[in-house]
Length: 359
Image 1: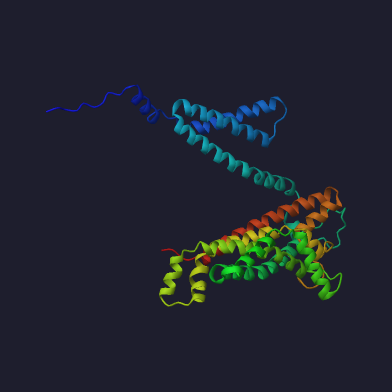
Image 2: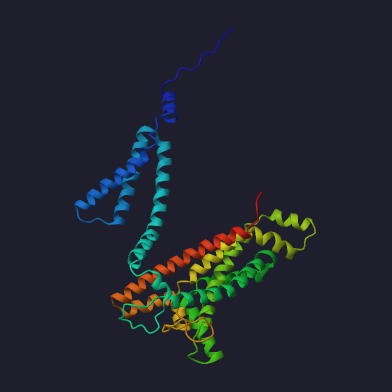
């Protein structure tokens, strides 16, 4: 009886096994290499008196990628080195995308924190001269919340119902026409929406009649296409099986939409609505044309007189110039950023409350 001996690894077999079972870099090596690269690059830039955060981050990423890939090729083999290269590029792209946001938040907080206090948030500019070291942003906060709230009440029902029609009912050429015009409206410049509402207001109420309601309508024109597109994508993500199960139980289509489709996509719809609000809450041009730019007192009535908003307040303070006005503008910018953050947190809470409960 002949026994088969295992093959003796020759040069080719040994080479293949070495490529697949080669060594591995220590687990802490990438982190240690990143820290070391950052320190070395910082020292080199400081020596040449050209240190900058963006340049430092870019050179650190390049140095880290080159060294870690080279070391991985030598120790782990080409396959693992390719994986480390792609991983380094993905992380670098993420950091590159986050860098402007972090820089923006840092700059706004650094310049705005000096005047950002309770007094600034609870008083208006009524009776305050531009050169006086007094006044606050309360009237602009009221105007921003009122105008954005009315724009949301106008645009969200229209946008969500349009998305429901496009996903559940529309067919053929009409669907293509609606989708085309929604896409065109998405790219409309904000000042065009403001001019449209100014022309509409002049036809209805005569020239010079600016108020918060006009500003809300101009923002609603900008919000509607964003709500439609985001809601349409969220509704398409609802599995078809859920609809068919509801139809199999004899539930009519409208009730399936209200009880199955919309609750299932509630979290995504809330996110889309918040993206639309974030799109318009910082708009300045349409509000300057429609809501006015000279209001200094608190106005809760959207239909009576001019109404100040945070972006217009920032613009007007920077336009006047001077140290005090610049400080007010930066503090108002910080207020606007924090307002958007609070709205996003509130939207997340509402989305969780209305989302279907999993057991």
